[in-house]
Image (tube, rainbow, N blue to C red; front, side, top):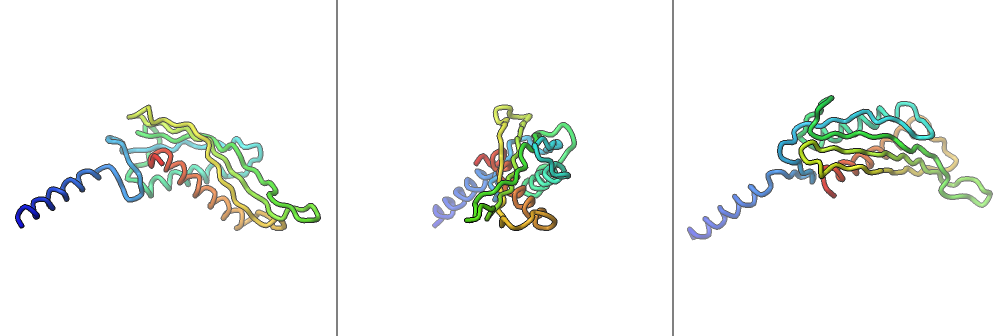
Length: 168
């Protein structure tokens, strides 16, 4: 019985000590990384939606704040996110018999540059994009446009977090 208790105790210690840098969100922070910086994402898309760059920058900063223990700083962060919004496009995806759009798609694309000051091998430059489909007869304005942008940004920012800190 005593050997069983010792075995359970050793197994428990090994299990908990092996999970030091991991979280339930799948984020793995390198040792010594305590701060992050999100630089302003410029809107370089051919079609400009006012305020889109501010909304995206804030969405990315908020997601990292909510899903990690890192502290947001304005300069000198251990890890840095920067880039541009490269695409904002509305296009028809399906047509009706009388050649009108049955469904439209809003697509937003972002080019990301990620820098890890402690581990430059983890630096990343990558394009991310996502879309939102809506009925062809609808106008993408007001609350529907805000909901579409929020849904797209939720997906893009989560993809960015997974690619940079989640290593998915």
